[in-house]
Image 1: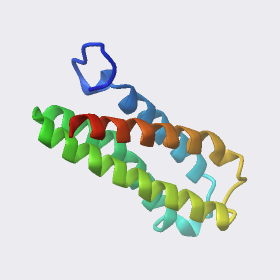
Image 2: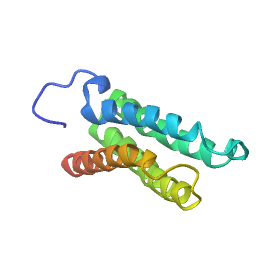
Image 3: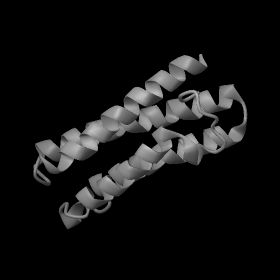
Image 4: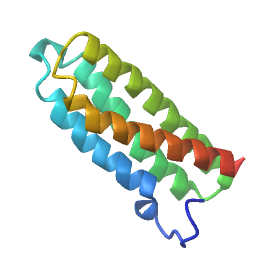
Length: 122
């Protein structure tokens, strides 16, 4: 699945570990968004970013390759939503663009890993 090492838990997956880092980054970034966005973009971004590692974990626990693939695709979809939401936040200038740099790079890496994993599972 991911590398040649034996994976015993979803926590051993690099993509899960990186997506957990991304959760932290997005929470830090959205903490400083305008307060009127608490039920808007803040909530949307946080739900999307949490969905990425959550679906990786659930899919891995399901046991079958078919189920894992389905949940990886859901994680990928959440990542795509988050990419769009980050772009919206940049355009609305909700924080300095450089604050998104690390999160954007991490998200890009996660998306590449998920893409490769889904390709390998097909």
